[in-house]
Length: 184
Image 1 (tube, rainbow, N blue to C red):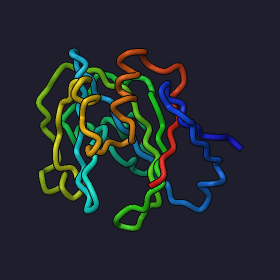
Image 2 (cartoon, rainbow, N blue to C red):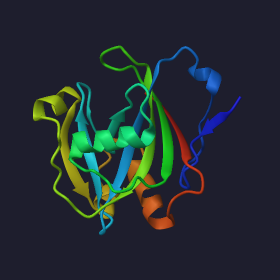
Image 3 (cartoon, rainbow, N blue to C red):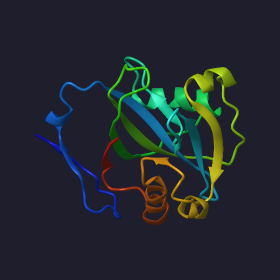
Image 4 (cartoon, helix red, strand yellow):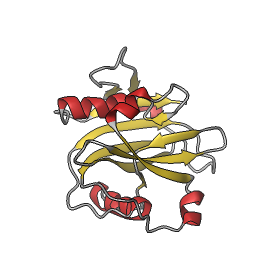
């Protein structure tokens, strides 16, 4: 039985979850991109749900049979208008147990990858109506300082996203992808 632990350099204390704890749950597989420009600014997407808004890495659910790379290329084109030359290393996997609004899923497993690019103005391929149906309401570039100084009332997913971004920018890509578990 493999254990998942929150193993980010600044995490304390690590949480654990065994694979059997997820048995019977419908977990949606998804991919996300930590998009970083040459000035180390990060592009985030704001999702607005009935209970709260949250800033996340761009990306989303995999379609049946899609690989992580193909799905991430599709999601980035749809949500931000980016067709990256290269998908970088796998940074972390976040398993979040939370019932979806539509009742189809009990949680999501996000696989986050590094994407380096030049700064661009986001131009999603999806219409505004399509984006809103996926709860996406804003795209914004953040400096590392802005992320770390954002008030506690601002929600990020993963919960400690500013710290994760800081760790990647400061220490580089982890040797092994971090495993993060979150329950809401």
